[in-house]
Image 1 (cartoon, rainbow over the protein chains, first blue to last red):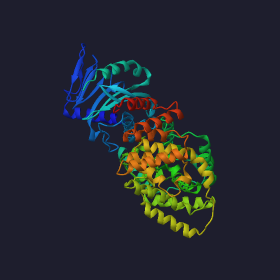
Image 2 (spheres, chains in turn brown, cyan):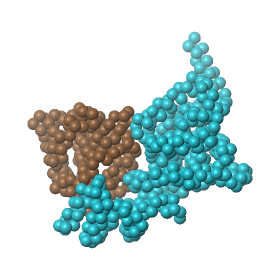
Image 3 (cartoon, chains in turn red, brown):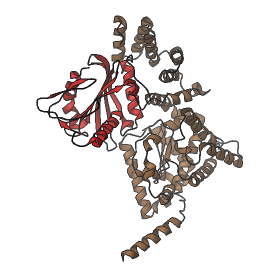
Image 4 (tube, one colour):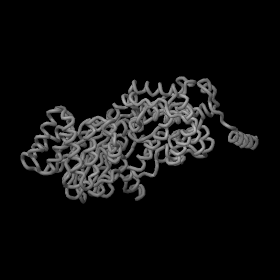
Length: 185
Length: 380
């Protein structure tokens, strides 16, 4: 998946930058992230890393659960498709391009990708899309993904939550919901 | 002693590389494999299981039975030693594994016109198995990993292991591909097919390569180049001299019809509008495809988004509505078109009709939001 690729790129960049600054534990009282393009409340006890204005969060390891928040300028919105986003895009069009971008990335499991839900959603005061996806890895593990996105005049914002269906997806979903609700531009 | 082992090892390898590999002559030969061949065979069985577990296959018993019946005509002496499975992927591809598993993509099936063209593909792949081309490739290739890079891009399936380098996915050497073409052609003729369809199969692939402006990544095109391949098949047809034979158009269309619209949808979902424009740009497109395909043509223009495409897409949607008024998607598409044009009344009436026709529309929430916004004058 594209965001899967983005995470890999983030991790690689962090590794190249040096190990010391890679992961930071969010302290027990919680923490607030405020970047150039957005701000969110972070879950206490989770590990976080950041590259530019993208955040990656996990509690038990990236394979068990991950939350990724990503900002992209319009011209880099859908790189696999070589398509831009724009401030005037309809939320259904954004969802359509997001799904196409995922499928075009040819990542593991995508042939089995199911769209369980696709609806509009208000995020940070903007109308965007909310996707609920499911796929199976080559090893047969079912993974569920919540993916939300919206645009403003600057670019595209996406929030992803991904975890194995078994045990983890349901357990940490509420953390993602809280984080999503806390997002502000 | 270790030095002696090394000498044996070197000699053994040299002997192995020089010994010719004999093609199999039938099902019984699959029971007599060397230890190395057995290992390769079992790896292929594991790959089969992986393909199945990861939901890469298009499961349809009727279609599966049809493909296997064609394979039986081509390779009667092999019984069930050769199996054919359909991969649910829009890319134009087919490949053979060293255990006789042959895979053909839904994308390939929908692009072909008749059974004779499909038989051309299956006959070619069958030769890769019967002539042990994977085994020959392994002997000739010191490192198979070099071939595995970018596998997903070519096949539409993410990488499943180095064994794929020893399948026919990338094409084998020029000699082995020529052998597969020539022996496959003989099988095609012996089974009574119209051999003139063989070069047409490759012409379809060439058209795709040209339309998408890609550097011939499809498996059939690598060794040798597609144009050479077409010429070579035309020469085989001339030598053969026959001007008749079985084409199997109707039966083939009945089998692949169920895949057609789904494939157009798959292309659009992948952002591959060029493929849809190529398929529906053929003069006989709307003889081959249901009239609802006008909607997919409109979607392809909308996604291409070049100058004049908005009008082209609206025209295609309008044609779909006129010809298949009970088909819901073009009503939605026209609604979005009118909404962007600022024609709120037309947009709302088209959305309304869409939801009437499809009360369980998966995008109902979006459409209801747009209708509300049209009433309140909100941009979104």
